[in-house]
Length: 372
Image (cartoon, rainbow, N blue to C red; front, side, top):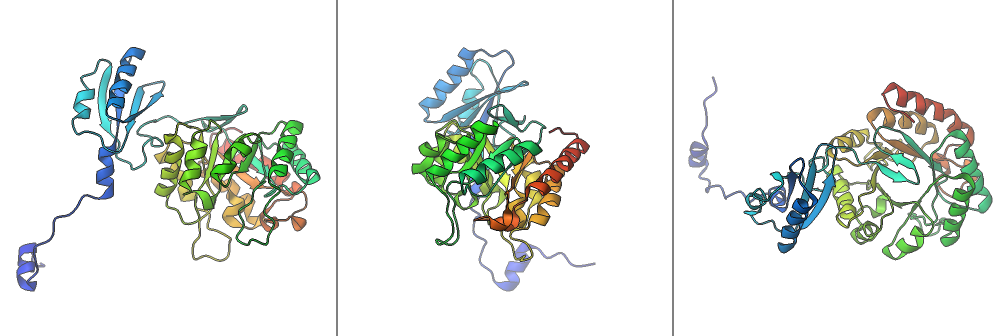
């Protein structure tokens, strides 16, 4: 039997100094910065307003969520007084107060246990259905984007993607048509009825892109561009937030928090592969992230197997796997002639391959109890 070595004996043997006091972790400090106030069934609007008014007196924000089973007020701010929880529980209509233990608050299922459904011109993302967003990496010409839109619409896509502004690793590669590309996307939407998803890269471009697009895409390189996140958060246009190349899931969800904290609740998370040691694919498609995000947050989650693999022949199996893992949809690159694409041709499906994939997506969605 091994002898038990106590800390005191060990310190005596090694002549160690007493251990320093352990400081609170950042997460411990964060626990004092947010809580939820659960209202009683039957509480009135006046009861809720009284709670919100008191929070304002403390320079705190109260975010109201009305659900089928409960109404809660999420409280966030730099510092929550230690006596606030007890104080709030004495207010009329308040059932209880609960700490939020996650560093992200408004995106957490602790605040909103039921799924958020983002409505984009009648296309609902989240809540059990599966959406397919498809189109070319970038808008190259009127003929190319119009043909792409008609092809993906005919095969059953629910939304159109296409880049007017393209962040590229090399400054010498094609970087998009700018506002002309936005106008062509809007033209394709008018012709097909497909809502448009396109990237916005700077805070100064938000108003411009909003005039033409139905969904802002925040690319992987801009996931932690907090000024941009706050700017799109001040609009009511849905935001598709891609995970950063080397971002943790927590960092990804905290970026979503930046958007929602500004008042825009319409955020769609997108797993698009992360950078690892593996060189056989462009990125490593992290389907763990899809399942974890669905568990931790109420926001819809979609997957991007085009960027996740970088290989057109891997897009189909990873798209199907994403749906099986719980993704609310996929975003796919489809080009009429991938061999002549100005960007990402190697990971783009041609029209025939995309059309062949669509019934397989529907079959997997049905197999796991979800519709298209």
